[in-house]
Length: 480
Image (cartoon, rainbow, N blue to C red; front, side, top):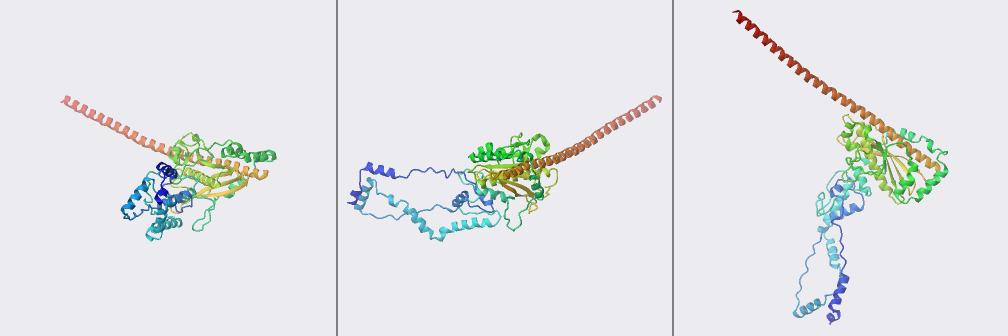
């Protein structure tokens, strides 16, 4: 019989069955770090990236309930054969594994009832890209804004294109951003002065000081640098030089108010700032979430010059998002300090924050500025606009290297001048406020003190008059 032909020793059949059993895949889907759903709901434009696709699949894929198969009525002899067949391990089902599931998908694909949620989810996620409103999207098994059970929330990093969109939604715009109303990208009012200042020659970079041999050594070092750390230690210091400007490197900005929700903290490769002792303590306390980047209060304050580096295999797009976040932090801090002690923010249309990126794979140095403008909505927050100032191929030739290094070093000097000017103005405001407060307190204390002295003297006068009256009465009684 066919059943006899299929039957084999029991232990042999089970060994093959276990061998054919697919390995247990311990997926970490339930424990995967995932951006929370509310982050995607708040984006005005959803970028095409893996995290967005993963969230899209979570919302549209519903579990499919298979209909139970109708039970067949078997005759007695067939039942015996089936039991005997089962005792020998059952049939070999390798060739039809998954057929039932595929059939169910194809069967339900023709049903509009099944496709309706998916079509609606696609429509809502697509429509959110064309309007800036924070509408709720998705029609998955969980509410779009509800946190999923067993999933650990994770902040979005600069690796993801959605990171840039999160900054755009709070009014921090990249270079040459295309506005919906076709307005021109705002540029700083002082861009001409910035370019003239950054282009001024430096004695340390003249051909007599930085020779052709020095440039060849730079090319060799840049070519041999395979990692970002090596670029920092062996390459970029030639461009950066080491002037007496307070600076820090690779420190996480974990004490600042976040520019946008659910994004990671900035951690620039280099940044220039001021020493805490140079700023009035009252200002430090009032503006700590805008100007004090690190929880360690001994670190530098008010950074307004930043540098981001990448090795030969680093992503330029990630580096651009990082410098965009850095510049937003710096421009916001300078604006807060310049507006200290005033009602609202003070806008002059100028840029006071500079930054640079260097990619060792292409040898490209790019310089940027960022400046704030008034919000479109009077009740909204300031808007910040990124402008590219220049770009240089540092490995091209010695003259181009000298120009790029000149612009970079001058940018550090100029940022320090802006920083010092803002500090002096804010310190003067804080001292003036403290003086006014002290005078007011002194005047109040003087009034209180004078009033108490007057009342005491009046009580003494009343007491003396009573004594005199009593003496007169006593003398009149003795006379009688």
